Image (cartoon, rainbow, N blue to C red):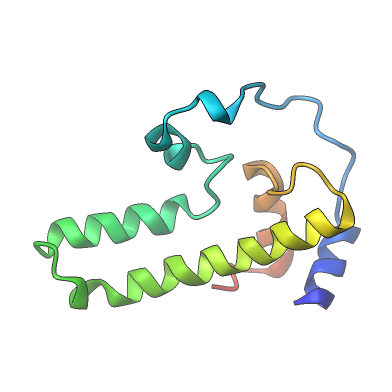
Length: 110
């Protein structure tokens, strides 16, 4: 994954001038999980939840959704840790930057 990350760093553009200015410490946990700039796996999380609702909470029926969510979290956690080591802030890329990263890979690696 280190080679992928180095390739992604080469795509980095100038810093964003328009960022959401808020303190996530004051956001409710529910709101934090639903904010696309904070939660990189929002689509996977929603898909898992909808699957559980559709299948009366039968977790066996939704195993593929759980696996996709877990893979998504693992991928973005690796990116976040590498950015932290490299001193890049914010540690988690915002939604706009994540879209560029995924586009450069061709598709989501999870």
